[in-house]
Length: 409
Ligand code: NAD
Ligand code: UDP
Ligand code: UDP
Image 1: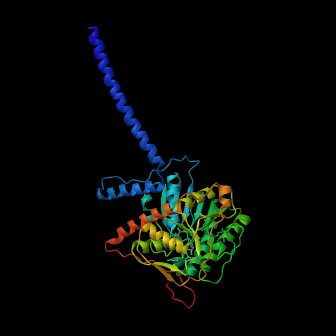
Image 2: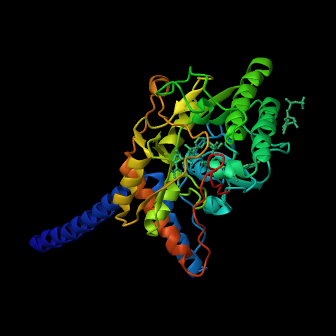
Image 3: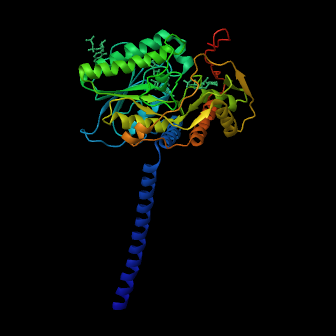
């Protein structure tokens, strides 16, 4: 009898052990997947979300899914306005701040931005999208303003120079007026173009620049210079807290296919087997940073105590011709390289001195150029596939050429 009881108990124990073992295994797998998920970068999570969303569209019974956002207490959660938030940089910044758990309001007039860039947040309780032109006053309540609204690519800002000037001057004045009224901190997305065609190389923040005030780039360059001046006038006179990021050439997914910038032009041309259009001899240089590096820098700067301008860019400098060859080889394209006339007032050498950002923000770019380019090439290939079915694929625009030479816009 005793033996039988012991046998029964050990049988039970064995079953219990198996059950416990199975439970432990399930818990381990679940923990590992949560951990891996948390480690995935923002881009991967958004990509994954798009796939889920496509499934949702096929089967409407699935509920709307958003990328996972952190929970922030009332004290830590900020109300953040991003002007130009539906554009290339603004939409990546929106992703970061949403995922960090903040309340984000995007204001955009959709001149160069697209709803598509932020559509994955529409309906989320922390997100709001307002169709508004910053040239008109705006009355909302916020804690921080990332002021990015402005066309950024040369063909786009030269398309309507007066509007570019109004956006950068009146638009910035309005956002500073708003910051003053509600006591918000404002970060201005300024540009390396404030250095013009620089005589100092690499460009540091002390350099005052070399800008042609009446050339085709002036509406943007001088517009941003006035915007910076306004920031410091509001800081000194009204006590508004300002941050100024001087952004150098940036690339990545969600760049507009038709924006005419060198990265989008060369990738689209290489993917479509068309000649890569190099303006001038291609000996002019640029240094390109991947968008996730820029976004991290913007957030660090906003939350720092540095009110003077800070360069954000990748100091790895290439000639445009080298860059054309690199893109051709990454795409494995048989496209030719075609030399077109040089663009007027095209800065000849550009490379950021980022010692200030390194020292004061602990920031520097971490995404290698080829890795960023491969991601961007994948993005543009997907865009071309999406648009392949009887949709219009815009041809890359050329920049305005020197006087007396052909003009492309
Ligand atoms: P983008 O053109 O993709 O985005 C600009 C956004 O601003 C768009 O969504 C556009 O619709 C919006 N906008 C333009 N005028 C507006 C107005 N009057 N009212 C409201 N919205 C308006 O350009 P981007 O590359 O994302 O640039 C964002 C900011 O960063 C710009 O201020 C640009 O000057 C600055 N910047 C960008 C780079 C770069 O290489 N991407 C370099 C230097 C500076
Ligand atoms: N402004 C705005 N939102 C606000 C407060 C001001 O758009 O919440 C605009 C306002 O219309 C003005 C600009 O910001 O054109 C500058 O405002 P400020 O108060 O500095 O100047 P003022 O109104 O006294 O001229
Ligand atoms: N560029 C080029 N071919 C193109 C587009 C641009 O050679 O199809 C050159 C342009 O003349 C400039 C550089 O690439 O020297 C960067 O141009 P982009 O318009 O991207 O930005 P910028 O730094 O001039 O604002």
